[in-house]
Image (cartoon, rainbow, N blue to C red):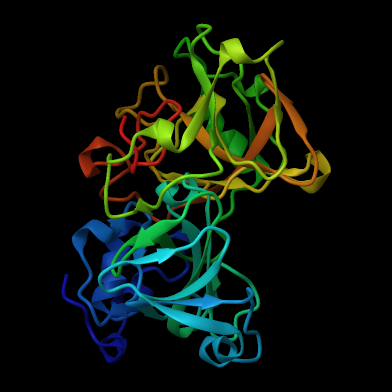
Length: 392
């Protein structure tokens, strides 16, 4: 897609067409935002960057190894960067980001938001499942992963590989941007009304979980699967501490056992598993989840008073995740995969334990494309799936 100058949005048809509406922009509106210069880049945008309600963001040509994370608040990112930069990494032909080190990478995309437009960013699923901690900062920003109303300028991605060293190059996509206006959040009352018409959680029998059996409290709660259907079934993967570099330009390339330790049902007792501190696990929800095309969902970080662990890095669910088409109220849903890292102390988890909370938000209009096979989504019908860089 050809990019346009930021000057081209002096008469913004998109802003006028969405006036008075609350929710996230669907893919067709994001494309229009790019045509009008609200999102722009010196390198032409690609059709494959446009997801149902988000735009994939691309890495720039250089990464900066920095000594600490920061928020610029009263300053620009470039000014703060001068205080913490250690050295540069050239990404034009590929560069290695070391495990445990902090990097800041300018993104190819820039924004010129009208008043009333806000942005939120999150890691892509493949990024989170590699135990890569990533978040976006902007000039004068005081919060990570948030683009304020009226912001005009560059975006920068902080990247911390936690389990594996990785090789990245200019143009790779680790994060995505969503744009919204108004208040897109669904209240619990609104969520329950949606659930009555279009159930969101489904069991192994293909039937929807009844609303009376669902826990709704500032979102919808899901639980952990540690039961399995056979003694050799893999219930979780644990990242190995020593491994070689993963090149993120290579899909379905690496053998999982070189990087992951599988945990089968036969290896645990009483459907319980003790997670080791600062180890990284891939686990799965007990329920199947169906995000109908008029909604999106985000997995909310586990509350500290519920346990000393983080339950996700990339917890965003596109419209159409787990939806298998049509209006059928049976045989919908796909299990959610969760990235889990305990902190400080060993933490015991067990089958059916409440584990994550999903908050739901509105989309202003139904996307013209939804998550699934038609757009070659990687995890539409997943089981306990590792990142796309590993052989299946």
